[in-house]
Amino acid sequence: MTRKSGISLRVAGVVYDQWTSAEVTRDLKDFSGSFNFVLRDVKRSLQTFDFATGGVITDIKPGPECEVLIAGQVVLKGHVESVDREISESSASVSISGRDKTGDLVDSAALTDGPSEFRNVKLEEAVKRIAEPFGLGVRSEIDTGEPFTRYSLDLAETAFSATEKGARARHALILSDGVGNIVITQTGKTRAPGKIQLPGNVIASRGSYSHAGRYSKTFVRGQGEKAGKNRSGSAALDKTAEPLAPGDRQASSGATEMERKGTAATGIATDDEITRHRPIVHLARSKADATAAQDEADWRMRTARGASEEVTVTVKGFGVNGQLWRVNEIAEVSDAFQDIERDMLVVRVSNRSDEAGDVSELTVMSPEAFDAEPTGKRRTNRTRRKTTSGNLDNTARGL
Image 1 (cartoon, rainbow, N blue to C red):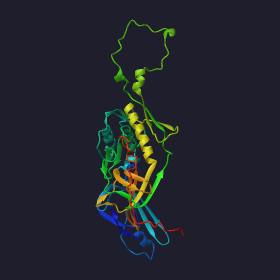
Image 2 (spheres, rainbow, N blue to C red):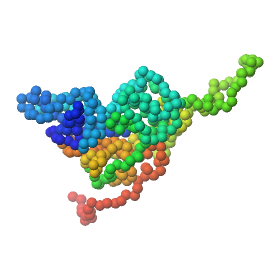
Image 3 (cartoon, rainbow, N blue to C red):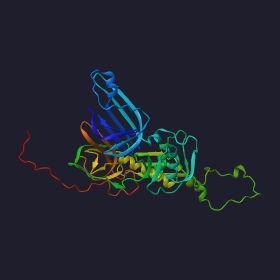
Image 4 (cartoon, helix red, strand yellow):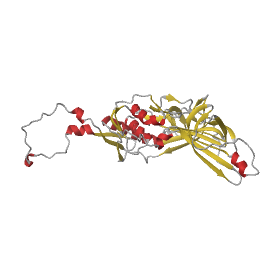
């Protein structure tokens, strides 16, 4: 059944708000936001069935720019990417889906016309150069640290991969704001509009807990180009020198100890909650000094730990007091079923409107998953404030 929804799609100035179902999703791990709408295909129903009735005529094709609005607020600017039509004996429907403008970075190659590397650039400058051909803005909300001496772009590397590897080396979070900009930031700088509580405003809760992707130690190995900066003085040429005789030559590793320290970099992060021997090694994809290698090792360990403990709750509506639920916000979570009583990071928001009404699915994880701040007590529950919903009858017996 088609119903007027709190989620609408604007294409070429025309607003469509009557859907069988509508869903808009933002996820920190998916970079670009996405949408999917399903509606009754009135035009083709009338063409196909004698018994078809009228309604809103929709004839949207892939390609055009569009805007998605929730409760009148523009939350996504992108393109219609797919239109799927389906017919059965009794109905005809069409599904319209797409992503925000940063979706092109996920699919497309980075700087096919060169250059193949940047030198002495900060992270935000490298991202700006990669994003410029796509017409995307870039803003940084944090200090991204020292410039990269060399920021290389691999052959056939996607634009998103080219930006994400630099952010990983600087322990930064790179995300889309949904409306045409890339944001370099850290997690949890703002708070969610309300509390997530079960019992309370939560109507469903599910949790996933796994150690499958976690490791006792995470190693990141890379190489830099700073050996030259550590050399002192300069070697003088001696025109009287003679080649060494074979017997006078000494075995060498091919590099001095100073050179090895300057070119080899290793970062190690330990997950104290994994007590058995379970190491993993990653190779840095950009030129990495010791700091960058350590930052990436810590980032990989934390994100793996965070992804291993995800809780998804369903709440009514799209927000609280006119403020929408959004990703990368800190929410106070009190979920007795999942045994959570602490602040959590909202990493995914899926707003859905269908015959059951308007609801939001919120996925939360431990707040230190993407940042470089001390873990402290952020993975520890507060003392739960006991609440009751009625008196229990201690005289009752099982049936």
